[in-house]
Length: 236
Ligand code: GLP
Image (cartoon, rainbow, N blue to C red; front, side, top):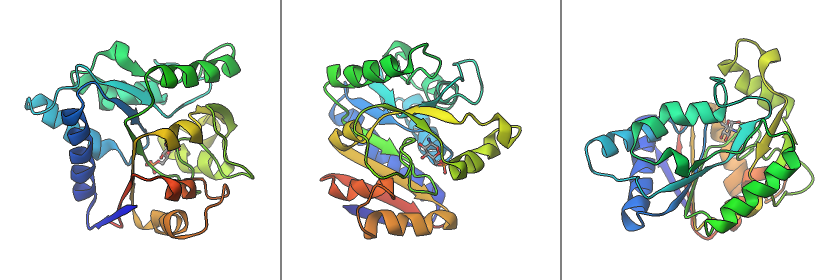
């Protein structure tokens, strides 16, 4: 593991964007696994700037996002598809048809999970997976539990996750209670994993995840077994 401690969110975002940029330059038709949440916003802004300056070309890139709330469609400003369109896809020259987010409004969520895994497989897997981390150690929406789940799956969100994510909604009652998330199989099969975490409130879970025992009760701890993991942490 490459653990990089930096002193600002700006620095974190710049390094993360440089790592992703290097991936795109080295393999222009790469598959990027992307994340939502507040942590990647600075990274995405840096990538958009590089692309707008003509330094980076996303025209051959395919993306697969980690997760989506059940019941929120692309027009809902709290859906992760909306987030990605707004914060990244409309700001870079990626072909929108090559961007993928699980469909949280599918009639048959189980079939949607299988479709998503098949899609990732058909793309040849993920070259670089970007991750944030939840306060309870979740990655994507893989919540703590008694086992690691391999495939894309339907999850019931932990009350602490609902509470944490309620800051983006009008009220806690508006936060969906379920989500579709990529499982640990696709994440762990990614050739490179880049996890970004910032803020004093993430310090404890970052320590537990990367320097504590590997346990499904701290989902991100499985990443200790990945052979190309970079973690960037800023306390500020
Ligand atoms: C959500 C997302 C995660 C993300 C987490 C942390 O629950 N499903 O992918 O890592 O939030 O978000 P933030 O970066 O805002 O702390």
